[in-house]
Image 1 (cartoon, rainbow, N blue to C red):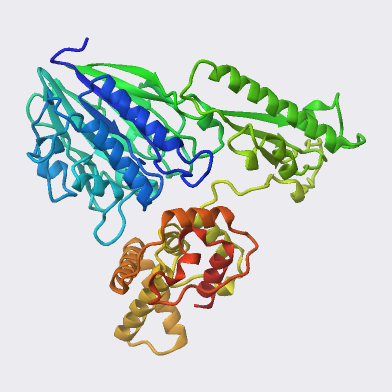
Image 2: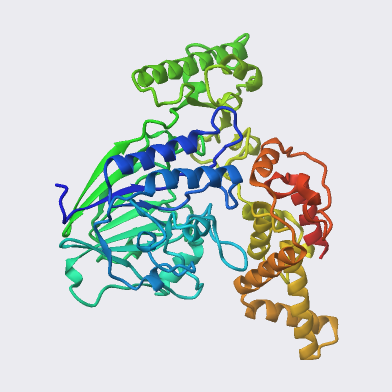
Length: 582
């Protein structure tokens, strides 16, 4: 029951404000959903809102995105309604990223009716020499309480925000997004500590908010639930977009995990197709109850898989006009999904009219892909994503192992193919590049991982000098080392270079170089490329574009046309060739 001892908390994660805001159809989706979330908080008269990271989709949100966010937070979170809980912990420790280190509703210059607490995610993470992110702008303006920011890369101490409402005591822990491999290593090395109150530890309900990979993407590219302390009662897990909001119990650590998922589909994958919800958490004493609240403004998304080899009763690769028959089958499947979307939308006026549709077609076995652009024209007025309705893929064909056969012939031309690269990271491109090069041009002063980090800063965050500064910094450091050692012969130089590479702290060197690049940009007075223009360029980029050199230093905003994420593979190829030359 709602009484003076019960905390009411609205929980949401991965709102991705500003996603595709330049799209004529989907541009307002993220804004409409945030408006619904905040309106729901006000209607239910919650004590506070808890956001689990990625409030913004871009690291540098556009002016429109910030304006809309501030407008909605001011509309729903400011007012004269009294706050019924107190903060008992040291707020200078809890809110250490602002010059106003106290919760916003205790600021004498502000009238806050619903406090919002948020950690940062991997999309809106802190960058630059000052380590600021978009959430810090909202924090400085008194609209959001940004917590869970760890400044150290060697040791993490998570100090909770201690709250009390009536007889209920709540300890709110938070940890903003950290690269998974680094955080995994820190957990293994016992470098992550969660602090607890010294007195009455058993009386506190412990709520932990984290923004990391939950599912395993590699040996260390995730955070196992077993790494978290067993005194936690509930974990709010951000970053994963699939909505699994019903709390699941971890039988080893004996805590519960809720995964609210994203409130807007940022990829056309099966995990995004689950119905989107937010949670209304009630906590009284050590007991909790989580109520699922479906979001009505989320655009519908339907996805199906079609394996053409399963329709041999209708056609085979040798059937006359087989491509036309395959296209007719896909047309029927898309039409079925559209009819299902229309039935679900009946009576719900808030749901956008045009749904997202994705049909993944496996054309293994000798079939040919048809013209997807021509096919999409049939649904331009009915779907929100007409350009990428169809996704062709070809799976590896398994050869039967014949008994006694000593040699297996593999047709490498029939490995998995896709018409578009989905989820490919810059670091992977760099690693693949150097794995494919001959031994004579392998890196010795630098590492693939370090160079991948520098190129990621260059591509994702518009740090034009990141690559050059990394190379220059490493060359200067190595030259100083060789001069100090007094080596002169080529053989001794090679040996010393290898020894210095083994002893150096590559992560620290990369961070120093990137900070130098950022300092150079600030010294020149360059402004970051507008996120709107960057996204437009990225959508229109051509993979086969002709390589072109980077903008000259000191030109300020003159190089806008080729900045930010708009760089295609052409410019990336140019920088890889420069790395090879160095």
